[in-house]
Length: 191
Image (tube, rainbow, N blue to C red):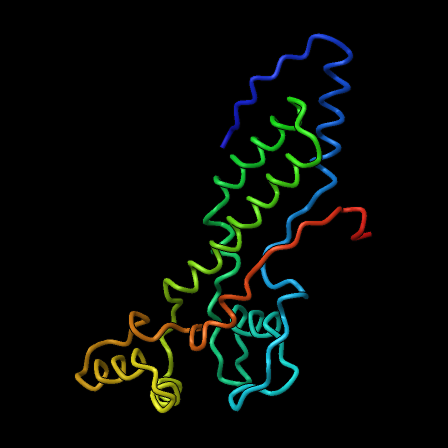
């Protein structure tokens, strides 16, 4: 998608201003997913101590056949679903920067990009990701009192097809979904 900038370069000062704006924007990156500071989880009866939200997100996104966990891709589909929004926002950031917006405008714009990404991941998880949960997982959730798991088991007992409508994969306590976040940093720190 093309972003109209309405840019007019008439003088060397305009070129310098454009170069400065491009340098500000090019120096910043937004990382969306499960940053280190949101990744720790308290141990529970279902999960070993030390497993992190980042590890769980990777396992569920890619699958772990050796543990009978199917792949449920949610990260890339979520990010692909917001490409146009992000492109529009990046155009707005660049335009605001070229029109005299300082570092605060860049930071504000990138914060908005991060929030768009975080919400896309959370929405993708909330929508339900195929394949539906295994009956053993549903029974375990039902024993913990999860109403959706009980409803899904009842539906399957009637011979209806499995779905993600009542019992959402990746959403039991909501901790993983809620840990989706973003980080904004200088590209220089990555090197």
